[in-house]
Image (cartoon, rainbow, N blue to C red):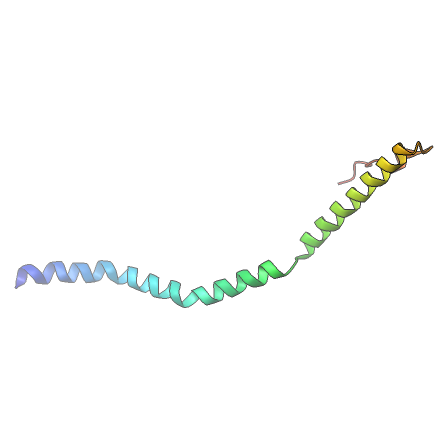
Amino acid sequence: MRRLLLPAAALSMLTGGCVAKTALDVVTLPVKATSQAIDWTTTSQSEADRNAGRKARKEREKAAKECRKHGGPDCTRYEDDGRR
C-alpha cells in the first residue's frame, strides 16, 4: 500500500498545475475570442492614417501617370516630395 501512496501523491501534485492552467484557459477563451473579433472589425487611428496616406499616394501616382500620358506642362508637381 505504501508503494502506491507516494507515486499517487506525487502524480496529483504534478498534474494539479496542468489542470488549473487548462481550467483557466477554458474560462478565459470566450473573452479572448471576443476581443479578437472586435479587433478584426474595428480600425484603429493609426490604421486609418496609414490607409489614407496609401490612398493619397496612389491618387498622386495616377495623376502623374495621366499627366505624363497627355504631355502636361508641369508633371513634377505630382511627384512625391519625400515627406514621411
